[in-house]
Length: 237
Image 1 (cartoon, rainbow, N blue to C red):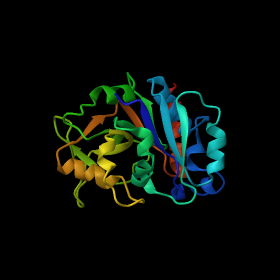
Image 2: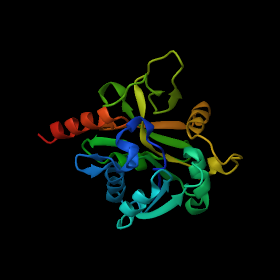
Image 3: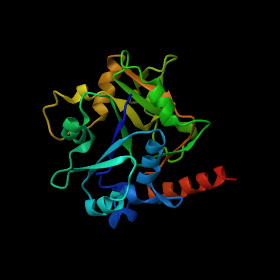
Image 4: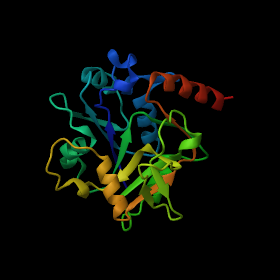
């Protein structure tokens, strides 16, 4: 079972400006806690031991913020010299990850939990014999901050297929998944995107989804910060 998470915290956060002119996006607070802490706390709750966090934009702020965390253990992957994108960020840390499957996590992937831990359910669903990648997916219609036509269709077995260009589909990628490191061993470039690996796994019939129990809060813009905080406040009533 995965015990390491790769946390993507190196992005420039351009859509979150002007908030991110003075702080990296993962340090933006939602309901009193930074976005990166929302996610790291969830992984700590299910016993994930290590979080590899890549840093680039305003990296010193992130390093200072994470310095006192005990669980999970924080390992910084320094991308100050060159931003590698998510795929390249994974390739760089493969020696740390080894050959075990690992979690991936966007820092703006926040949700209101349902009846049980979504991360625990995702890990329990992981079946390496049939899956190369397992993604947490949410219903776009009930999510906060979804301003696109969806990402995937899902069949009765949970297998995902990519949205065609002209389609509107019900499920969006909720920013968290489990993936095999072996997919990246032969990568030739240093800077490359992660999404094409999702689509290639879908073509092989080895991309699966686990539906989120609760409500997904995609916090990608300043307006979405306010929406997310209102949703959290309503859930507490």
